Image (cartoon, rainbow, N blue to C red; front, top):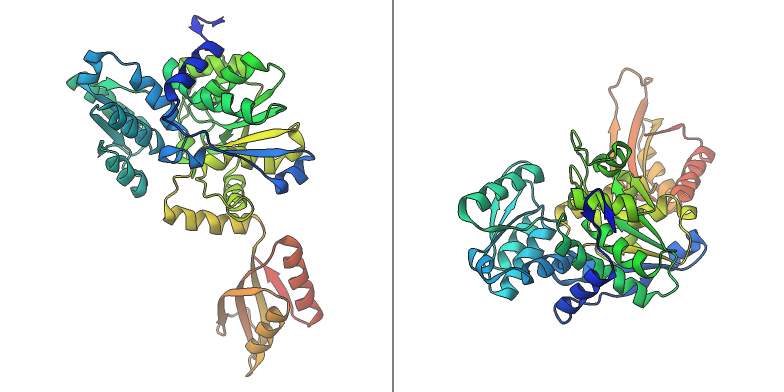
Length: 407
């Protein structure tokens, strides 16, 4: 099938990649999510590519691409640019195939991803503030040294390798109706769509982008790849400024819908994966789950949500968990005015303890001009079990006679 001179991949290319990858990559598990199924109204499964070698699906495309290089190209070695997951995929593939690899990563790349890339034997170099600048450095290195540049998504071999995720989905869930896939540059969703649509054209394929780094909606509207003017998302793995020509054509012709999720959606999904699915997932890897959580009735079951990666910086994990708890209504910030006398603060804390709220922070103010003489304003940050519990806490304080403001 041809679209604007771009040859789209079909079943044969993905099948051939599956043969190459046999014994190299893991057939990752498909885990049922009862909590998501209750929201959707039918079975929902998580395709756990966060449990793949290197912690993401990227090894599939990288190994497929590198294994098809000529003998001359292998001698020259490879160079890539990545925020982390493609870097690790290329590094491991090069190690397995006995090739040298240089990887340029943004200066902001999470340190665990940099360390893991070096651990697989690659020469990891920090260059530029974002992936665009790192990619420019990689291209310059390729031109100067003769190393082969390995594009993170816009190459037929890379797309074919990523498409093996779709083959496994069809094998593991033969009655699947909807496949939901996180999307940055589009390599994974292009491959999954090529694999799935070739065998089951009735299956709906949905791409999910971070709203703050969503290049596909504008590109599809314009009929060509259009670069974003800027990006600001915690989901570094899908923070790609523009689709490639090849992935654009695949998404345009094979993907049924492109949806976006907010930063709050992403953090809520990451927290959901930790609490309910017992999975460590990076923000990009949680994008498909975020879309299902945000609008569960939009997905016809059985649904498979691809959890694409789990390489998250522990520092970011802490921040995202806290943000996710706030987005889920698990934190409550209160201000109360109480008499300035011994025991007043203790009485407030007793009410909160009896309500089952966990006090995280307490502060009080005596000197503000807005306070009456003999008054103290108490500021409290609480951890609750969710919005309903937060309402119960507020109602209890109201019954106790406290004037409370939130926020």
